[in-house]
Amino acid sequence: TQLLEQSPQFLSIQEGENLTVYCNSSSVFSSLQWYRQEPGEGPVLLVTVVTGGEVKKLKRLTFQFGDARKDSSLHITAAQPGDTGLYLCRGSSNTGKLIFGQGTTLQVKP
Amino acid sequence: ETGVTQTPRHLVMGMTNKKSLKCEQHLGHNAMYWYKQSAKKPLELMFVYSLEERVENNSVPSRFSPECPNSSHLFLHLHTLQPEDSALYLCASSQVYGNTQYFGPGTRLTVL
Image (cartoon, rainbow over all chains, first blue to last red; front, side, top):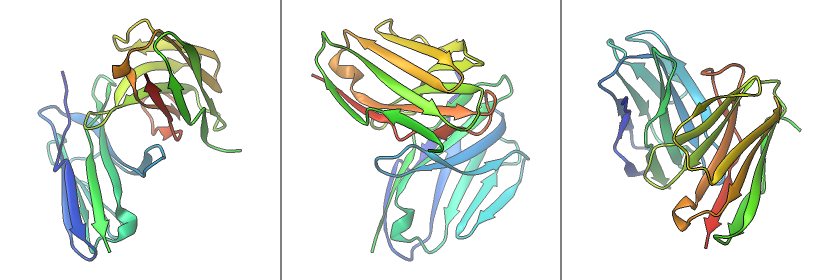
C-alpha cells in the first residue's frame, strides 16, 4: 500500500516566522500536488509538481519535488495569519492511484 | 453558480435514519469523487465515478450507497449509519480521473 506521510502533523508559529512541511513516501509518484484547506471549506489546489527536482514558487510559498519523485516539501517564508489552514499533499502513482497525506495543520498567530 | 456545491452543509442523524448527501458540479467535469475526512487521518477515497460509471469503490460498507445520475450530480445515500461514520464528507470533481480535483465545502455529518 502506498502511503504519503506528512510532517509535522501540527505546527503553531508566530507571524513572520519561516516553516517547512514535508511529504514523504517510499514510492515513486508521477506527480504531486499541494492543497490548502481552510475551516469550513474543501481543499484548494496550490501547486502541481511533475519533474524530479522541480522547484515552484507561489509568492511566499516554495514547493520542491524530490529528485527521485518520492518526496516533496513546502516552505513558507514570513508566515502570516492568512496562511493558517490544513496543508495536504496528494500523490498520483504510476498506476493512477490518488493518495493523500494525513495533512499538516498550521496555525499562525498574530 | 460556479464550482462544486454540496448540500446539506450540516446533518445530524440517528442510526436508523435514511438520508442523502448531494453534490453538484458546474465545471463540465467528467469525474466525481466522494471522500471521507476524519480528524488526524488522511482523506479516504470512498467512490469514484468517471463518465457516470463507478470506477472505484474502496471497500466502503454497504450502508453507504452512491448514485451518479449524470455527470453533474453525485449523491451519497446513507442508511443505518454508526457513530464512527461521523465525519466531513467531501465531494470533488476533475476534468478526467486523476487530474486536479476541485472540492466542495463538505457536509459535516454527525451520527447519534
